[in-house]
Amino acid sequence: MLSLLDSFLEKLPIISTVYRVTKKLIGIFSGEGQDKQREVVYVEYPKDGIWVPAYITNRVGELYVLYIPTSPNPTSGFTVMIHESKVLRSTMTFEEASSFVISVGVDFPNAEDAYAKLLVHPKN
Image 1 (cartoon, rainbow, N blue to C red):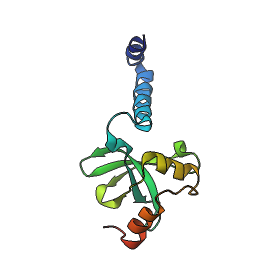
Image 2: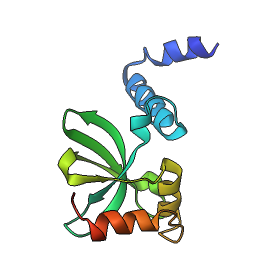
Image 3: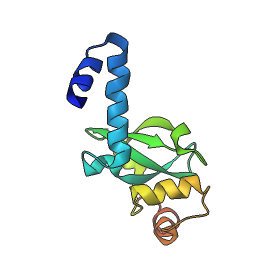
Image 4: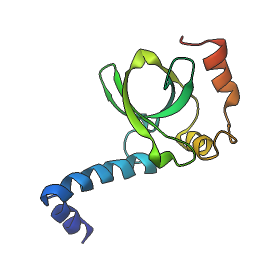
């Protein structure tokens, strides 16, 4: 039954695009698919010296597509494309980063990691 509904929705002109993208987003946020899509990085945004956590949603060669969530509602974030040399890897999990954003920074499980990467050794 679900397969039939899925097939039907993918054939409708405008709804098919919305449905396809929604399925991908649900997959990313629920943990389905590739692990790289749930990777958390730090990126300087909106200017140099200001670091925010971001989720890698896609990669094309050396170009990363990042979703930068905003506090306290991470679903109201935005998407940027950035060269891989402009991001720093984080040890935060997807869930930890989401908790950090939702709690407006109060819940910061990997503060030492951020300090070491962003202040002590910026831009390795």
